[in-house]
Image 1: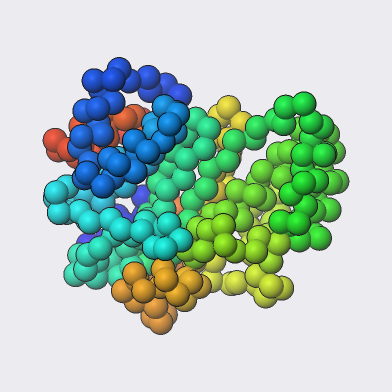
Image 2 (image 1 turned 180 degrees about the vertical axis):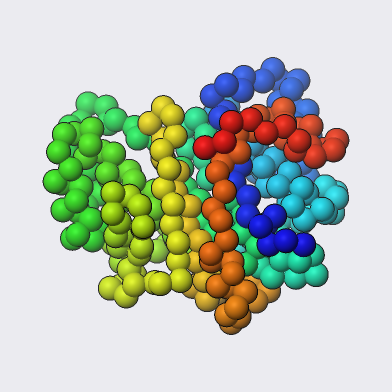
Amino acid sequence: MELEKGVQRWIVDISIWNPSPHHFNHAISLLPHHEQASITRFVKFEDRKRALVSRLLQYALVHQVMGIPFDEIIIKRTPEGKPFLVCDSDELGFPNFNFNVSHHGDYVAIASEPVCLVGVDIVTHSVPVNEPADKFVQSFSSYFSDLEWRSICNAGSSDEMLRVFYRYWCLKEAFVKAVGSGVGHRLDDVEFHHTSWENISVKVCGKELKDWRFWLLDLSNNHSVAIARGHPRSAISSYMKTLKQIGFKEEHETGLNLPNPRFTFLTVDDLVRSWGGGVSRQLDVL
């Protein structure tokens, strides 16, 4: 199986999905019972929508890429909340198949990798209500390095300051989600460098991680999405236990330099139909 098949980028715009109670219940009924409970625990319907689409993306992607029947897919979570697939991915052709999901604002996205760690994060460039932008950003200053903070403060207008703030935040979240630490990681220790948001690199505690790649894209309606891809040895211990291979070199070099595909835009109906055959409809790509 070609490694490129394990590199997937899917995204759903949930702002255009307004299901009836019947359609929502049908979609949720496709999932295992424990996943249904993790969705219905949310009070707000918008939160339920995001949680449902996140789960649908995970199962549909695993089914299409790995060829595992839906009723045999087992997805668990680490103590930190990162989902992982329980299977022998090496026998299926991928040394370290893993995926990550993110949802914020109008979008829900998933990214997968066959060898390297992957993290994805979406952020809405929300404008603070009844609070100046600089005061809002100031409350998060402890999460940024001195270099990043100067870049934010020197961005120019309030809108540009927020844009730079959210871009850094998106990249940081993608990285810590890739390694499996999530909110438990000191974000100010993770410092990003870039050239006009291209050629992005990261330093952790002052040391550059040369075996990582990053991509940052702007979505419509003031959203950004970041992708992180890196060496499995960077994973925290609880997540590392879910991986099949850690110390390989040649496969990692191949995986690290695989093309980063554009996001495929899907609808919830596309995902629901996949339970009957496969995700066949591909809309616009980003």
